[in-house]
Image (cartoon, rainbow, N blue to C red; front, side, top):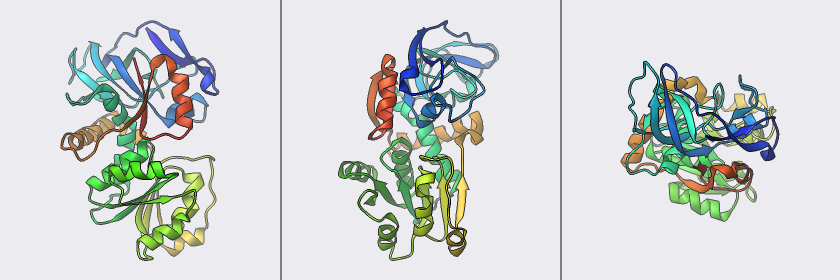
Length: 324
């Protein structure tokens, strides 16, 4: 089978298409014929060795995918050959989803809604699981609260905007241009702030009558955390999901103390395989009733994974997906 692998860490040029043996499912495993695989920032972090993993190169990248169960190992349950599924959580301690076939644990398989195309199903994985874990499990976002999403046009950001609306929160979204503002408004954002031309903290406070926002979903922590402390309401919560451009950030302790700030750090990995699958089951229910929708911005053939990673590094909306 064909798989996109790295043989050493580095830039997009390190992504190569190899012909390797098709894996054989072991106990509790299912072999999936992958029809679509989402491209995520964690895949880039693995490629650049910014997210250390137990498996050294050569290795196949990819966290998320969608496809059809091709074969089952012994002692599996909950799936049968021919099931259409999607999944998340590969590529860290295992081979990833940038391949024609991938091994998953049976507990990772989530039934794909019949009406949902495979690229859209693949794009639900990490993005919606992360947004749901951030808003529901960590921030406990409530109806009527005001939430600000930092970097709302990307995969996780666009999922976060939709989930917040589904939870009946007011949503303020930061974006980098007018096209992105229109995009997130179409997903349900009540107001947008252009972080390139506007003072985000001042505008957010103006939009809330000086009170500040209840929750921030922060996807670029090292770039924005000081601003977040300046725009939250007293007792506000900041859910820290994405590292941003640097591995450290310096903030004023006084600023945090002054507003009784709560900083909530998170990793969806802490939900475990069963937990992530359960979260995605809740997301599917929202998709089926039309409350949220996966947004695929661009698709690339599997062999063009390098171009997909280059697109991820630039301006984009929604998810970037590889198709086989």
